[in-house]
Length: 197
Length: 186
Image (cartoon, rainbow over all chains, first blue to last red; front, side, top):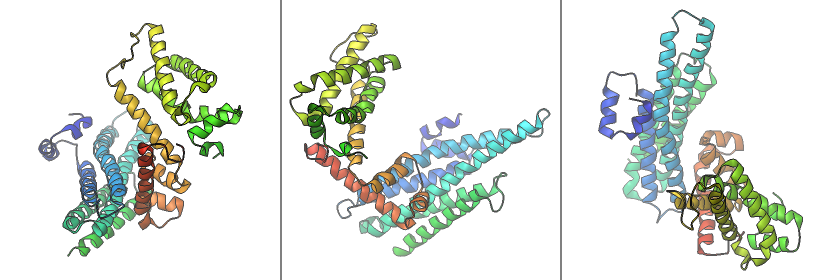
């Protein structure tokens, strides 16, 4: 199945596909969808709090934008990962070694850029979840906390994928950004979860 | 931003009638993307045909501005002019029969979308430059809160709230426009 089709699957079909022995979708797509679920929850909570919170509409709009971007990244990550895997398999074969190395580096770089973006979206979704957790109607605080936890989990998973990418070394700016996003998301989630206990 | 760009459509029409060349340039600047979008995205005209219609729309606007009865209705007038000339262009090319009805599936909704996009663009122009910048960064350039915070030197924890407030202002402006002339550009 083409990676273009993932978002058209029913959720149970997608989960079956995820559980299969194939190469994709994998952790990056799952992380992206966790962030998308989180953003969707934030939008729902904000929309349900419009009567009591002036900024609810603006927060819902931002959440929906994050949801769309994260869902697209579920596709993009699978595609980037498949390309990088194929390039890795070809790396040891005969032929133009220098050209292959250059191509491999580019594809690994792209495979790291996508989870980095997912981690940053996760941090943003968690920040929005913390905001709605503070101002939403009381009945929806648990959903806000769930959103924060999901967003933090997605950011953490994505940051790990950046860290293990072969093109990323310790001290790499991409790794610093991924870790900062992971930390920011975790702090937002911790704050939101603590506020409803 | 030039002084003319802050004028309402009605005020701009008035300046054009007085023979102000800069006002004419502003009118073309204000509506050029709109006219071009209707030609290419709405009626799917070729680049060459769209260019011809574009020239003709503004030529006719220049010569017939005196017939515009309601100065605040400049955009609907230009929209009607553009649609009529697009249909003429299509009929001339013999690709479709010119009618008053949409010439292709989805045309009406495409034109509505173009209209809506330009209404939002106009409303955006009434917001503060900071608001315009923040909304552009988040919604058009897909920048993260952290990037926005770093580049604008604002506390990262305040970005989402600031964007939400800018959106509230935009919504108020758009609602004012739906309710009738009264927005800062009429």
